[in-house]
Image (cartoon, rainbow, N blue to C red; front, side, top):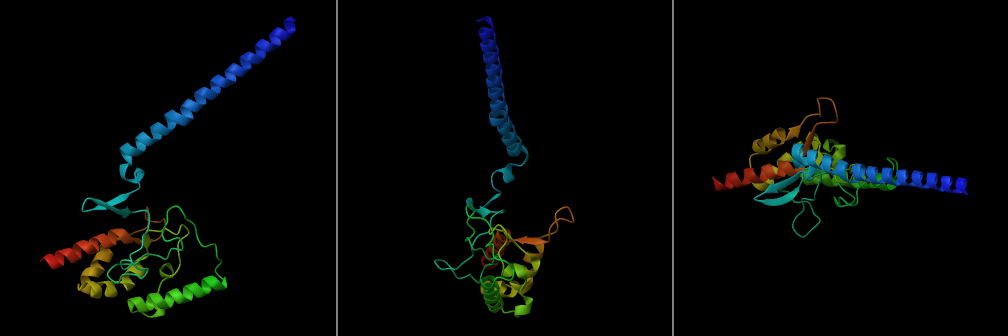
Length: 210
């Protein structure tokens, strides 16, 4: 009987110790740690922690991290007044990220790229050979907010004409919003489409207001 009681006490002691460990770890990893990380993020990286939201005229107009469509109102046709981003098979839906999963030799993808290349060339008034890859292919996430400086530059003339602006002014906007490689060697130079278009909007307003 004594042996049974001793075994029961030992089992109870081990179970209670395990429960205490579970409660402590739950408190530390499930409450204290997340709150600490959130606090540091809000204090040190406030903008990034809140989605890198961009505001214009006091209204939220998008995020620096998520691409968006720049179409004619009520249509799926690109608006010539704005710089266009990379294609997105998900419609830039942040809840549906991911590539099309089609291989480079897939006939469907090849046909899609060829068609897009012709459309981009015609839309911007440039030869097909001048159309860069990011103008006709989506990113791995399908919501890339950036384009290459090459893609931005081939859009300059079209954007300038559509807005009645000097081409040199629009080209300067592209140069001003071209970001280099991160840390000088990571990634490729890029242009954030949302920030570029907001600068374009301000430049157009300034021109018409002068």
